[in-house]
Length: 144
Image (cartoon, rainbow, N blue to C red; front, side, top):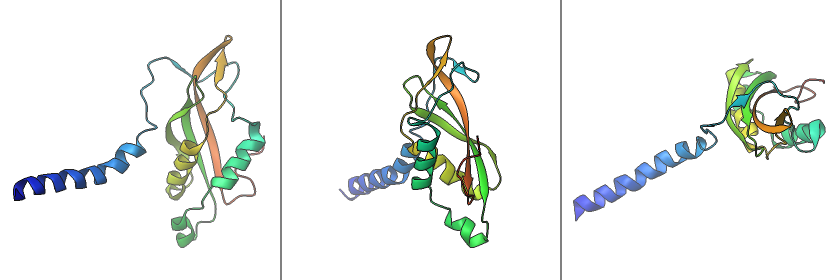
């Protein structure tokens, strides 16, 4: 009986340890159809640039580690795929000014609602997109 209880407790504790890892990877997805980088109509945040700025401004949390280290500004380029249905998957850092901002940049991108997908030759397609996110600047995005 004691052995069974130990096994059950081990299984439960393993689930608790690995569940957050599995959840964090839920936005990683194998896409079986082609992913395009150059399209006729690029994916767009629903509501446009101003809505994207509002979303980022409202949801951004300046990393406490950056504050503790005296880092006041940073810029992170997050690459991701906007699927045909507008959902965002496979977010990763393509360039960063400081790794202190990477986790928050990924969190913001994965938090975003579905976008308007890209189009190529009149068809909706999976599109690779890069979004530069700025921390500690007057604007969270570059001037257009």
